[in-house]
Image (tube, rainbow, N blue to C red; front, side, top):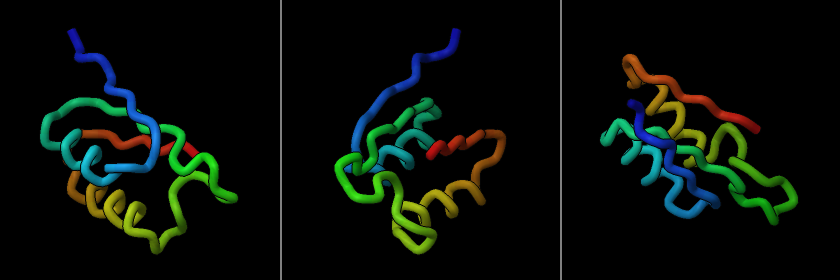
Length: 69
């Protein structure tokens, strides 16, 4: 039996949630990242949010990371 996916909304604690998900082995879904902005979602390729995703993706072994725009 698989554990249910933890669902979060918003950009607050984004990096913390990613790291804790990796450490705990729990699946998370984060949506509505900066929904009120002119350009919602993650910032460009140079943003700290995107940078942490790149770092985690390089070090994930046997795990999958899915990102949706």
